[in-house]
Length: 257
Image (cartoon, rainbow, N blue to C red):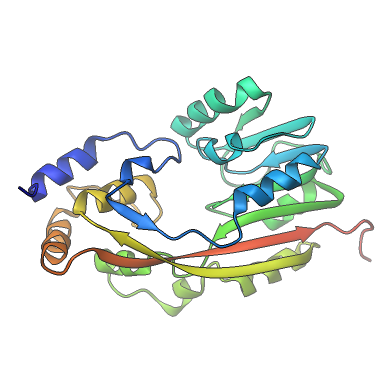
């Protein structure tokens, strides 16, 4: 017997959403992964670095999966539940976890790191990244690209503007990186299929990925959630698409005139 709308929503509204582990969605939602394998590539670069910084590390799950860290390794995070989780995972391995808002300045000296990484940062402050990189140092990251989960966003918020559709486009981001004085070495973008199999998966996702529908609560969107539940019951999984951008940029060895 299938579970009711109220049962699915109540369960998803009560579960803990701290950290950046999505295992609760197993069997309830799927998302294709980019072909390049970010964590593996990040691991290779960290193994060769002397000082590393992971910006907006979330609950530290991605960084915790790395085999070896450079002699000096730090991570920043802004959300208190994630800071606690990241500290639990990373401190035993010698990583310093720093509480820091997702805005400048980063609490580190100029040129402190030869590698800065980030997976899915909510904001990217290119001048700050360039400042904390040492000459010849690199920024290596996987960003959330343009129009990610727009099918779901527009179901709840209605049609979005062309300006919002352009936000986080690789062309814009690489231009900002160059304006901050960095040389862009590599940039790739892929669109990836997502499927949500029940309304509980949607609720969990929107509670966890808070910037998808800002201010989302079950009570505020209950009627629209019910509409989506009815649609999924009639037509099957709700299909959306994520977008991921891999970007690598280097700080020149000498300052440009």
